[in-house]
Length: 470
Ligand code: NAI
Image (cartoon, rainbow, N blue to C red):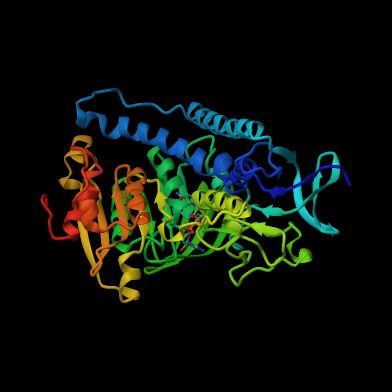
C-alpha cells in the first residue's frame, strides 16, 4: 500500500464526479479522481452537451444566413459551408472547456489518475480502488469511494453500432461530410438536436420513433408545437413506427419499418441510433462489493447518496432520475456538502429539461398530462410568441409559454416553453418555483420591455385572469 490515504476516491471525471471533487476539496477533503479518458468532463464536455451545442450554434448561424437574412433586408450570396472549420471550432470549444476543468483541479489540489477504476477488496476499514492504466494496475486507498461513471448509448440488437454508418451521438458530432440522408432512430433529446444540426447543414433527415409523440416526458402541447416547427424546417417524422430489421447494402443501410401505414423501407447513408442511455454499472466491481441496483438497473442510494455498501457512494446517471449533466453536478455538490455534515438537498421537483432545437423546448415541473392524471385542479396561462414584440423583432414567433398553477394556492406547478431562447427563459420558472412563487407573484414582477421574458409574465397574468395582450 502506498502511503497516501485519500478522504475520497472518485471514479469518473464527468459533470458529476469533477464537480463533487471540487466541492469536496473546498470543504477540506483530500480527493483523487480516476478517469479513463485523456481529458476531464466526461460525455457532457467531450462528446455530448458542449460539442452538440457548439454545432447547434454554428448550424443555426448557417441556416439563418441562408434562410432568414433576406427577410431582414440583408442580401448575401448563398452562404457556403466549410464543415472542416465548423468541426475544428467545435473541438476548440471542447478543448477550452476541458482545459478549464484541469485548471480547477490544479487550483483545488485535486489529484487525477488516468486509467479505468474498479472497486477492489477492502483493506481493513479502507476502501480500495484498482486502476488499470497503460503502466499496469495500481491500487488507491481511501476512506470513501464515489462512483460517477455515467452512462453509455443503448445499442439496438437488430442495428448494432458500426462506428461508420450506424452510429451513436459521438460519431454524429463529427461526420466529415454532410450526410445525404440521415435516419435518426428515436425522437428524444439527442435525435432531435443532432437531427436539427444536419438538417440545417443540408441533409435529408428522417426521424423514426415508436411512440406517438417525441420527448415522452414533455408536455404534449409543447411536443406537438416543436414537431410542427421541425417539420417546417424539413425534418420528416415517422411516428408510431418500429424498426424491424436493418441490412447493409454497400455504403448504405436499408431499414425495414413497420408503421401505421404498414411496412416500408428506408435507405440511408448514415443512421443515428438515439434510443436512450444505460448506466455504466458494468466493470466497476459493483456485484463483488455488494452494491445493489434497483429494478431499473440504477444504483440504490440513500439521501446521502450512499449505496447499499457503507463508504461507497454514487451520483449522476448511475442513480435514479433523468440523465442530465446539471442533475449530476447538483448531486455532486450536495453529496460533498452532506459528507461535511451540511443539510443540503437536491430539489428534484424543479429540475429543468431542455431540448436545444430551434425553437428550443424547455420545461420544469409538472405537465398538464401529469396534473390531470394526479387529479390536481390547476389554472393554465398561455402566451404565444406570435404576440411578443421582441419575438416579432427577431422574426422568431413559433411557440409559446405555458404556465400551470395550483387552483387553490396559486403556486406555480409547471412552466413549459417552446420558443426562441427557451433554454435561457426557463431559468425564471425554475427560480420562481424553487422560491415557492405563485402565478400572481410572477404576474406582478417587472420584466423589461421588449424582451422574450415578458412572455413568462404574460403567461402568469393569463393564469390569474389578467391577460393584457391575449
Ligand atoms: P431519450 O430517452 O431522450 O429518447 C429516446 C427516444 O427513443 C424515446 O422517444 C423513445 O421512445 C425512442 N425509442 C426507444 N426505442 C426505440 C426504437 N427501437 N425505435 C424508435 N424509437 C425508439 O434518449 P436520447 O435522445 O438517446 O438521450 C439519452 C439521454 O441523454 C437522455 O436521458 C437525455 O436526458 C440525455 N440528453 C439530454 C440532452 C439535453 O438535456 N438537451 C441532450 C442529449 C441527451
